[in-house]
Structure formats: C-alpha cells, structure tokens
Image (cartoon, rainbow, N blue to C red; front, side, top):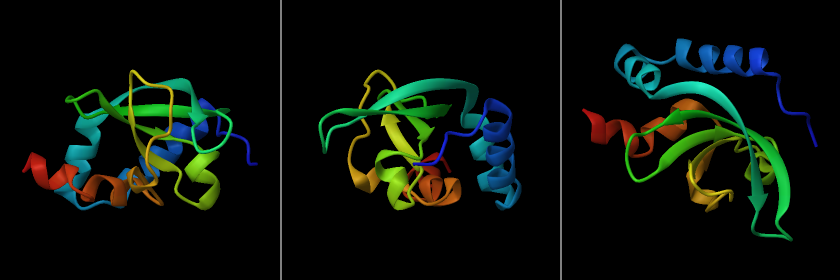
Length: 113
C-alpha cells in the first residue's frame, strides 16, 4: 500500500485539484475546506483494518465531510471520499471517487447553486 501524503503534500494535492476546476466549482470547493486533520478509517468490508486518511472538507450538513485515503476504496483508485465525520468507517463505495472534482459534482455542487 502507498504511504499517505505528508500534510504539505496533501495540501498541494488539494490545491492542484481545485486549480483545474471551473470558477463556480472552484469557489464551492474552497468554501468547504477545513484545516487538514489526520484520521484513521476502518475498513468495514474486511476485519476493520485501519488506514490513515486526511479529512479536508466539511459539507456543513448531516455530519458529512471529505477525506483522502489510499487504503480501503483508495486502494482501488478512488481515494477521494465522502465520510461521516463522527464515524470511523469508510462507508459505501458509491461515496468514493477518483478525483475531488468528481466527488463534488456528484450531487453536492448542484445542491449548492
């Protein structure tokens, strides 16, 4: 398994993802950002294996945030995920995406405009 990016590398990755977005989506993404917080996510589809993740966004409703993790669904290429911030599990695969943009467009951005 790949090592989780450092805090500086993760911030740079988020900035690069946001930089390529169109202006409305870019503004929305920036509005969601919170200070990076390391969190351990448990893989409920196995034996509750634990993987480090970065939590970087808060959607401001229903305890939903966003994380980046290279384990769990991230091991399959979907490292950007929607999580419940007060829970320690990955959640459903339908909430994990190959890019930050894809994650935001899949329902959340449309609701904000």
